[in-house]
Image (cartoon, rainbow, N blue to C red; front, side):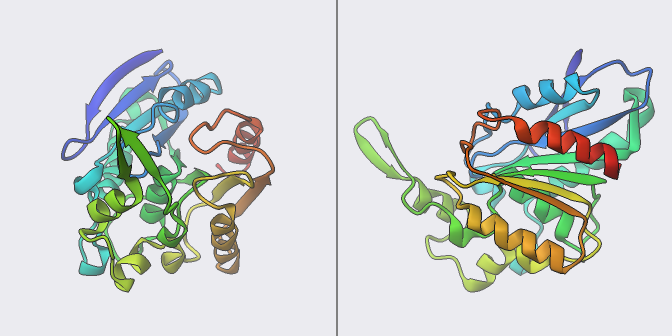
Length: 258
């Protein structure tokens, strides 16, 4: 397995985990979660290695976070992470011969906030953005109103309100406008030309309620988007391989749609 670091845009970069480059293979761009405050380690290299084992070239996108991820679609400004994911897809297609990538089989796998990023890119129509051929989405945050408002951490004896911090960084205010919330809500952008989407969530998720994903899937289906949805009883947010039965289901689904 060959690894390398590839600059994308801004401070963003791809960590590439390439198998052999003599054969054209599908490729996956992994967008880890972390609430747009950090890049989750659990959803980075471990996911890339699992896709490698199944014959996929894997690329982990370290996208912009915190104030660099500010969400202002209501002002016509594409958020940095969305531009970075679009550019990542362009980079893969431009280097397909060099890296042995099948340009018709580029998948984006998004986890939590990374799922929101992948879905936002795929759902925006009125922008010149590069789109993937399929999506694999894990416990996504699709609607900010479902965010965990009780998310707090203790640091050096001080309690930090992480929900308030995240809100201020993403929207520039602790009380975002209705327009900003609608721009963040992927349901408002769903359309019939979105790529095929595999999506799963767990009922015991304590960070992002599964009901938000159920609502989102209903929106996909009402727009006739090719979608496979699995709702499991068990699963831990931020630990995608706590119970990994979703992974083989996703790979089997990808074999059918790509």
